[in-house]
Length: 348
Image 1: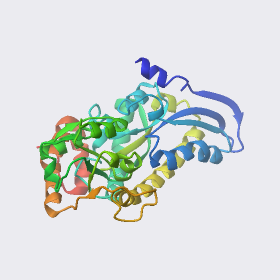
Image 2 (image 1 turned 135 degrees about the horizontal axis):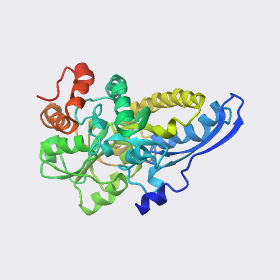
Image 3 (image 1 turned 90 degrees about the vertical axis):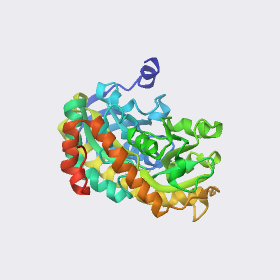
């Protein structure tokens, strides 16, 4: 608790009474962003909060943003801290806390979809259900989403197929990824993103799942030698606010933030669509790498057998596990929305 207290020190809300050019009350608050060295934060969240919001509000809204990785936080606790009111607003990677709140993975279950476009469609279908869940059960306001690129598989030693994860220790974030890995026969381990590269180097894990470009930017290729680019999931995130704090904001400030955060959501999804291919190229040298010097990882081709195993893992392990953890009301909501869209029914 001491670490958390230090991490959130100074994150108190401040208000001033002067009116801006847009007749908005001067409003100052702090935002906790996502992983600090990845593009969702550096290219989208950070400029959005430091520049864009100040500009569109005529200088009335002053938001100070820092990623959770600079605040002594590991990630899984971010949603809980917003719910409790310790943090006013944050971007939370939802699968980090899916063990506590299973509904977080409803639209990003491992093995369920294969493209960012499919993910975005499911997010929009499920949005009203998730927003209600956040407000009623967690005291949180859902403002928008975002996503990393496809979460792919990095391995230190040779793999030739998805089935080769059997017997290996695999970093998997969130309950659905862990169920996916376990079905294949691997041993899933929950390790914070920043700790994965040394874990690969030391043999604590044999393989790890993360974004195709995220892993490149964090130099996972220095410890991993093989890359399988089949999407396991996508790393869906949500921008949330503590509901009690949110309700203290002026309605005009709320309206502006809601509108602009939806613009941010569209920008982040658009960015994610191109980053999978860039990440694969940069890790393997199989195409142009606009990020810098390409690495020399071995690209593991995806076969029809791999795709069949992915689908089997989702239907036989991931979805039943999700249904059991999420409960009847959650399953009913999923079946009426996501399940209806996919033509799949969860639960018995």
